[in-house]
Amino acid sequence: MLTLRPRRRGPAPRRGPRTTRALSGTVCLLALAGTTLAAAPAPAAPSPPAEVSWRADLTSTGADDVNVRYDAGALRVRDGSLSPASLGRDRGYASAVLEPHHVDRPVNRVAVDLDATVPGTASVEVDVRGRAADGTWTEWRRATADAPAELPRDVVDVQARLTLWNAKGEPTAVVRAVTLTADDAGGAPADPAPETRASAFAAPVYATREGLVGYTTANGHIIQADDHFVALPSRRALSPKGSGQYAVQVCGPARCETAPVWDVGPWNTHDDHWNPSAQREQWKDLPQGLPEAQAAYEDGYNGGRDEFGRQVANPAGIDLADGTFFNVGLDDNGWVTVTYLWTEGGVDTTSFPTRGTDVGVRPQATTTSTRVAGLRGRRPAPGRPHLPTSSGSAPGGA
Image 1 (cartoon, rainbow, N blue to C red):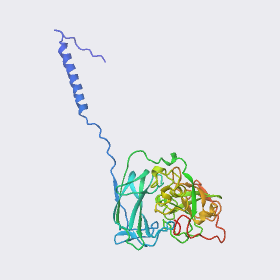
Image 2 (image 1 turned 45 degrees about the horizontal axis):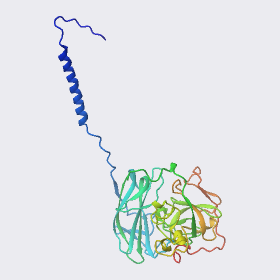
Image 3 (image 1 turned 30 degrees about the vertical axis):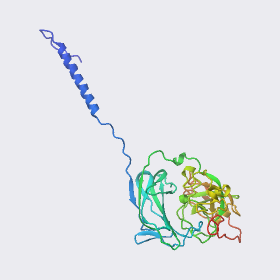
């Protein structure tokens, strides 16, 4: 809009000074703005997430615990003569699977601080694992205060497992408190999301028959005749009693069976040979899929001995319970193909013994869940004896 003003009479207005004053005001405003910008603090770098700490409850023992008792304010071995069936070591053994703890944000590193008394003949190991938001568990990983467990992916639940050993008749370790501290170590997860992973890892493995009916497995299961489970030489993939959270598919001469991992052995107890070399707990110079016992037996690796210094008498990397052994078509120890269903693109499976025909194995207890394997329920021939031990483990073997 144009505004008309009355025309003034007299001398012309002095525009020079007025223009100078206006320009000076503009410069002052710019200078002020510049001062304001220069004085604004730079955005602060994001601080790392705070650690989350909690003290585990040791007072209540449950169905997943093995040979452990809580007495006088501490956990200890209950029966010093009990040892896992597939190892046959003359030592007292106990295991306590503690309740999972939910954290308020994703974590992938866990440190463990113990308040314990451990005599020279005894030992205590603490493993931790995590459950991701999709419900799948990571493998168990050893953790201490100085060497935290690095989990392969972010998790929202953390669980700890204590394993206690003592020499037969000797004092047991006494564990009074367990404090866990979790945080996010940063960086990209080592294990990609399930939907982007390749198929589960599989490899040929020499299998031995566990037998040992009436003995107790590392997770507390009493071995039955015609039982269906396997033993692997690492506690990283040991399922809690009665569960199939870690399961394998074993394919033999006749058929395949999916069975849970319920025991530790043969030969070694820290040989997670299904993991990539850099992730193996021990024997990191061996390729993925090659058990230490096989390398020792075939190539003289480690002087031909296992982790306990025993001479390896066969290349076994898995033990099969009797029902699984005969169901896949073995009549003697031999080679099978094993798929480790929890690895890479595998599924969280649950497996149960069966004597039926073509029974479907599914990751969830619904008929709409994807079928991952089938069991045809072959039983041992009538009169076939149950071996007292496997060839590569237990008393008289490894």
